[in-house]
Image (cartoon, rainbow, N blue to C red; front, side, top):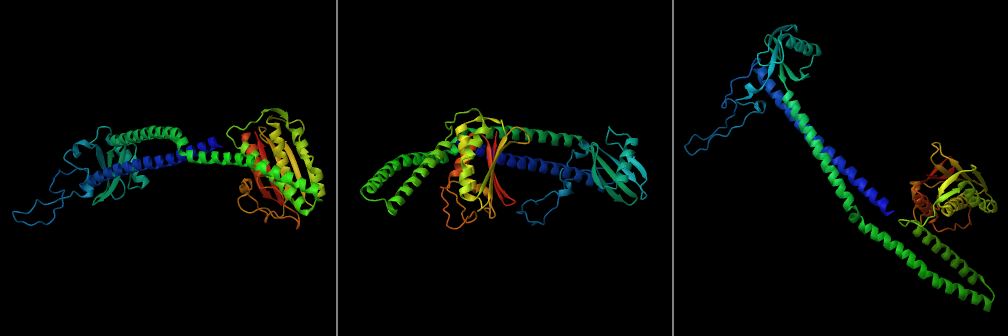
Length: 430
């Protein structure tokens, strides 16, 4: 149980960390791509506004001056470059590679300018221009070039700018950020694994104290119960047995049964329960464990049928599997409707890798909500699993918890469901 808790803690922490890493890396790269494209679009707009070429850089012309006091003590005017001119400086016109395609109002290409790029000929520029005109788009990417269209007095202007350098930078940034993120993720996961024991230590200590308390309390309570039982027998020897002595003996038997199941549950939930694993005939074991309940079911006016596939073999603890069958069958007999039916089945699963034990009983009013609560210790849903009036319920509310502990100790799964008026418990034994 402790290892299972530790694994869950590590898995949950690792998944949360992975989600955060994806969000951070995706956000950083998204902002980087957006900003890079925005800068490229700003330069394209500048070229379009200047009829296919960069204007001469004029620092004063690129600034918005604020009104200032003309006195000698006034501070120099503060200025700010407009957003559309960001990324444009003295060297931009010499660093940017682009070509321009001009078209008339009918969409016919009239002129191309490839003087600012070496990788594209006039014929290729015409092909790029026709492709953009046919698509009807005003901006986008075509091959290694980002383009944008604009309207002029004579028709349309399409500017293509070489973005290979920007694309390479974006790809490198993505790879580097992913590599650093992956390395950081692995490192943090290792730290989580190393320190996970310390993180769950309070839970482990609480669980260990709980088991120790159950064991100690069980042994301490046995002595006074034995004394009470002996005193009751002496009273019955001195005087005739009466309803009071009989009630005392019944409660002693009940408490002894409760202590036995509590100690059994604590033992099954240990990290390494003392199970004797070996190959055995599970068909015979299930039949032998379930058949004694046939008479008990008949005395209660119910019918128990056993359908066990012959010759099935299983590697596990035979005693624990027999106890599992007894708990599930007794539970089904106890909570089946009056005059109802109980069925115990053992068969090989469809994939052939598991042996399924299925115990079902008729139940007109099944429990509502989360059925996994039935496996909780001391959980009792008597209102929804009602039976005939006057019939004592019996049991301690930990039988199914023991069944779950047995199945888990065999690294298998147990589940329950309510359908078609039946309560069905299934143990998938691996």
